[in-house]
Image 1 (cartoon, helix red, strand yellow):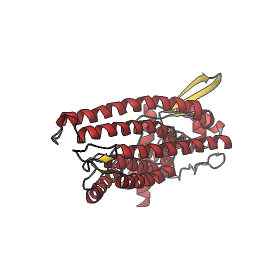
Image 2 (cartoon, rainbow over the protein chains, first blue to last red):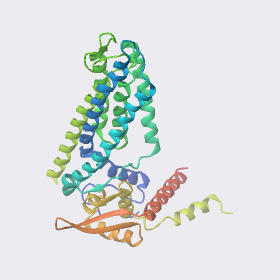
Image 3 (cartoon, chains in turn orange, cyan):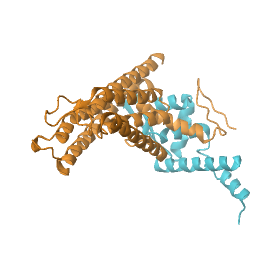
Image 4 (tube, chains in turn cyan, orange):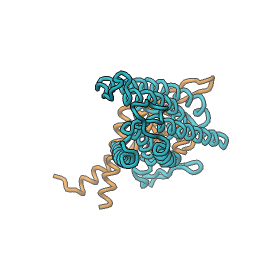
Length: 251
Length: 107
């Protein structure tokens, strides 16, 4: 067996350590991307943007003024153009956020704990994506059932916004051993579901809607879960940032 | 034709000796997870001593498994490390062989 000099509590890397220690090292390197919380803080903006989009989009699609006084469905094109607009806006936002976060990491984080340039597409094993989709689809199915049973409609637009960050938080937290992500996944899922159940009420086409919580039961309110997740990402980001700053003081 | 035992022995002998050293394997494992990393980051991750890290990184550079770029940031020397294509491929092959050998031994 080969031995090696380590300072302090090193990762035991020996010839007999096998591949698991090396896998752990790779994971530890990847996980530093999330640990300092800066990406969480960047995502707050994306969630607020999506929330505001949801406030207007759902009202526009669910209660189209143009079809008044008849409750007619909008053309598929109108629906898809709204979604495409969001996707493009989020792609642009994420690109800018990626550049800004990289610079801030270099400025604030690297002087104390070193710097790594992360890949835009993280080196994640395909089974991680598989777990994400299983969790996501399972959650969506359960929540659709719950909303259909309790609210008279499946809340088709809000459920993906409840479930998507929850599944992402859980899978990333689990794979990369980020405890706060796992906690926030559960808290966010419960909070967003309960508040969607309690705060939204069915809107009538004849009276029009009174705010973004007054929704058509089939559509739900995507803005609410987005704002809840934005608050949780803000908290998660601040916790991560403070933790890394704590490490700096210890160093 | 070789029997199973011979194939296992051959594979063990053919493990890339340059990667098959704990410090170098650790450096490469960290770099597998990122595009590039600086000296401080590698120190934090691998918990090697500065001397060890420098020596082993140099050996990996000589084998063209990693690229070492030196520059100055705010008047301080700054060193960045990244894996080359050959380095990534070598590390993947090494891990596959280790996994395979572990499975064989466990059987």
